[in-house]
Length: 361
Image (cartoon, rainbow, N blue to C red; front, top):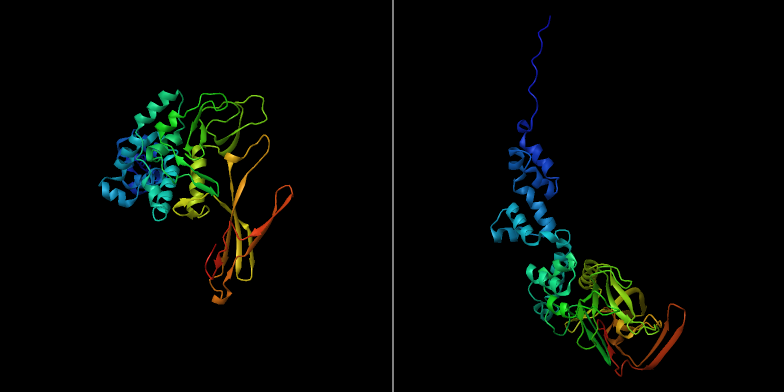
């Protein structure tokens, strides 16, 4: 009879090689990585392997290699320290922090005064005190943003954009949390609404609904609009700007840093450019941008007020002798209903600019 082969030793966690285990751990989220610390001594040691925490620091806290070097900490301790400070916002922090970083990076060379007007972040206890004052919980993404920057000083120009007509000017500041709490609404029509912005020229604010009430969804961001046809004078319509604070803030930042909103005289002007609203004749190109003015508009009755920015430029490749002067204007405006309005007259707002190669008006 053949001799029986000795049984092989059972494969245990302790006998597995390190590299494959580290590869497996690299696919785990930070919660699972922490749970591994409580499984066995070997897994506890492996899950503390510092390079494993690099990905989580970058993903959730946007910590760069340079920041790590400056703080002289390992990746795991950086993750834990940041989590102990802003861990409740881990689902929002990266999106909000990236938006703030992108916005400041874009504005610093273009609107330095605006960046200098930003306040340092609020403390957790400051936000808790505001919640106690208004009797409502603040949205976590709102709190997260205010931990990074507590709004701005009440200055002009405002961070949330400007608009200028010959007889009308608007510039919206991002309110700090204490000023916003002072404007928290309990009155009918704006119940449980907290102002996010304020314009000292028009009194206009954008609000966030911290509770669902009066037909508003919780966390919705909107401009208020009095219902002029309602029997109740407190009735409010809304021009909805965003479904959440994150949606509202990140979409605005995207429009700014992509160049969608023009920077004019150190201010962000909230004109939206439609690529289809461009016409070229010879060396001259005319493009149109539009901006909605909620403070002059209403839902009931339906009256929507827009302002337009007309840009006229001559190709930089045009010959110098092609320079010309704008003598008169004629606009043929067709609205969504097909109604046509014609506007004509001398010059533009009383001016007769000269257009040269590479120069816009």
